[in-house]
Image 1: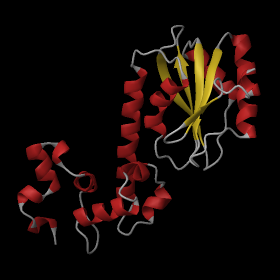
Image 2: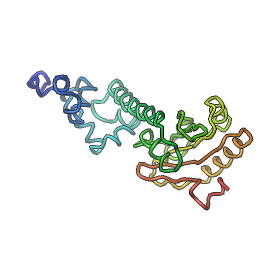
Image 3: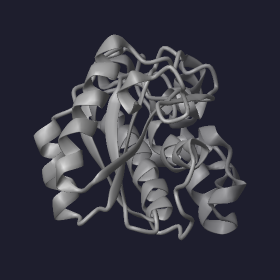
Image 4: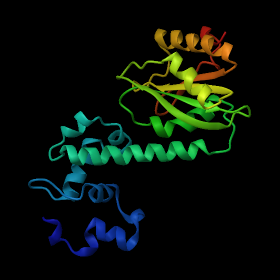
Length: 230
């Protein structure tokens, strides 16, 4: 059925304009973003198919790569770019809100709560640095690198430059493991030790390195067996 054959109250855009975005289902919100369907499918049918390919999960959909999105029948580059931009704006909104939250970052749990909206559902590794002032309030966050499914790189010189630029008293390093296992690799241990050693002469404290998964995390500072923080 073509969208123009639906009554006005059933069309997603008109429904949102009259009742607000909150009254729309996830499929209807996607339809508003995508605007048009594809050959043989109206935009609502295409939106439901996209959600189905993600198992009905917006978290899974938000982490899909461009290549994965383009495998969905009817999803062109323009529509894929629209979805990716939408989810990235959502991540940045959460990061911005977290950055102005006047709660001291005093535990790995606080780090997890601060960064997980940015990391949730990603199918690749990203490494971020959180900047803290002397009272351990978050004064900003920045992505350092983006890698594959099981690797990311920490540029020690870049971390130092950014920390000095932000006048950070302390920093927290954090990255995700898409595998769901937060335990550090040997390379994670090596990079953490190298960063802590390089920051010390600058008077900047590496408070923690927290590895996050969607529902759990690992803290170097909490782990008694971690040589990187000895």
